[in-house]
Image 1: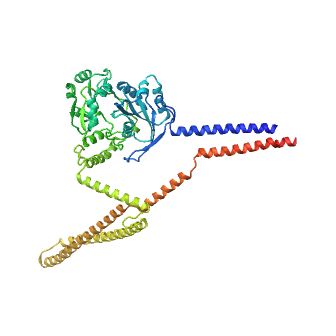
Image 2: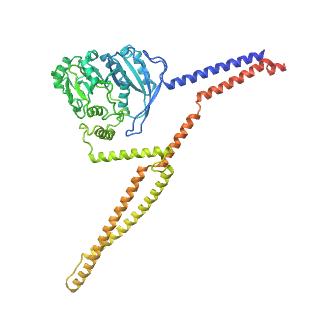
Image 3: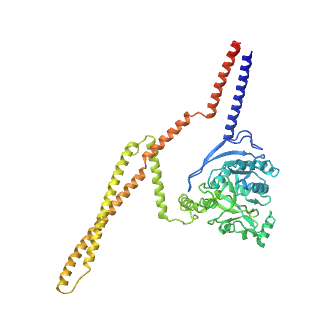
Length: 547
């Protein structure tokens, strides 16, 4: 009987251990996929995560983990609606609540967080009394932070593409909207119909207050008075082109919407149709990220209109961490490249500043075509195909011959250069000899000798010229070979990449998740424990038989 009781105890302990282990594994897996059950409104259940890789910039591209619908709004989107889209980090949460209260309509928010405390700050805001507007109107996409500058345009695109209405309102979080704008824009069928049928944007003039003690204006007559009295000015006044094209003096006087022309450096905030072009995600941190978007819209033929009665007010916020901002000068190369692309994509876009010459542009285009051709060759060879009747082995043999030929030409160039240096030294010596002359019979003999030396010198100069031409031709041949090698690419590297890819795929197929291995071990331990428990039940514990 004692053996049976001992077996029961062992079996019970083993069962408890299995249940605890299983619960631990499941909780870890759920946490890895995203935080579950956090939607205070429309979302229920686990959050499925995805990944997004930014394009090549001045640094290595980063891959971000994104949790869609981390929060879902309680109030749905109407058939005809305008969704405000914005992005932020933890320190801007108070500004997000302020913006939500001023708009009062659906919002699509991209939230950038790394540490658990930053996620908790968002949770606390949603649970607070002040977060009522967010719970009702805002859906949130959680983007897990990676080291490096803030991916501002990627965040803008995530918020923009998460909106479900036909019309969108991209904006930065440190603004408020004039009173009644959401109801006004929903009821203005003329504007919405025009945006649906034409490539156009409708701009809200952006103001900022010159004194923090000045009350926030909510109506046009209030902000116009502040503007004329010097208490309000165009936002980002330190860089006039940001808002200059809006024409604030005209806006203060008119009663109907009006069209404006794009100017370089313009940074308007606007309402448009959801088919609007994406922001270029190569812009990270600060420098050109916002200006690049309206520039491309202008190149693509978008019309720029200004609302006559609605506006924005900008509030100065503390700057983000330097890690987020990065160095704006590192974006200059990205800007130059972007402007060249616009020039090509839109058949000589007149709005892209002329920071490059057309000769360089033609070279870049040719280089890009050659690089694409090289990539196709590498792909074909790596998959076992042939290019110009040769497979990967044939191309490797050809590359080896080209390398040997290139090395031979280099040696030839070095020999020619050494010979040329020797001739140059001889010519200088002959010139020094030929410079002296004297009078009388000795002088005449010396002059005759000098004339002969000059003739020899001229011959040497002519020979040197030939050598220089030969050297130039040899260098040209070397450059041609190097160019051919660059076009053909490094097949060995392509093959190595293919092998690494196959090994990685094989490893993924054969690897067993740790959680399943752990459960398998626990199951085996349970089976053994049950077996011995039953055996002891039948025959008793060994010490009981002795007794």
